Length: 75
Length: 156
Image 1: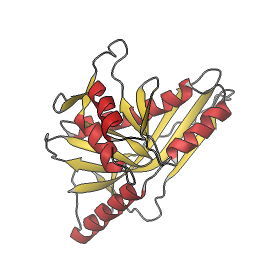
Image 2 (image 1 turned 120 degrees about the vertical axis):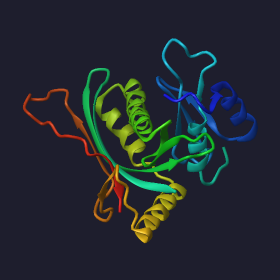
Image 3 (image 1 turned 135 degrees about the vertical axis):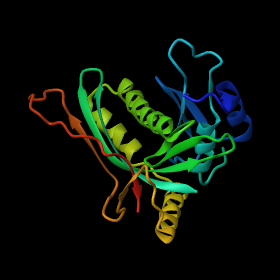
Image 4 (image 1 turned 135 degrees about the horizontal axis):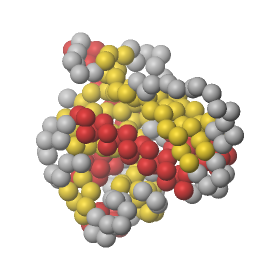
């Protein structure tokens, strides 16, 4: 996996709470599923390798893809 | 330039008390050379996951892994094959108008420019619809059913 453009997943959760009210995140086995407020499709952000789930960094492209894929709400 | 892609994946998924086979023909968008100079493939049909990296090969591997891990998430929360199939259908049917429009626009650009990519097979998009199948393999009678994934193709 590339190492450029990393962002803290914890920062993503904080940003969602502050900047995207109504969005809801749920951690599953491999991904954090992020649900928009309009009951549209959820977006999946990788939680990182098992055993290293604290302070995980993910590629910024995942967040960009989530933003680009959302339509009626802003993440 | 964004490239409209067609993909076909097949995956066996082991759940709690069931084994399922998931096959899918879907659509995705490849974006090259963003701010980080990386390659990213984002799901269009289904939408909601992506994979990226320093080159197309890494992006494709990460994209496919992302698709698989979503299936594993669903399997981990399903107590039966029927539950798994229902949740899979919700995931595999998911689209948004914005991403679908983006894919259509990219396809129109490929056709307008008669774009040819030396690393991607061309596949006529018309008639190459989005489809998926979730099969219960729990009590599979063992017989040959091997099929090779098509991988990535350029929609044209």
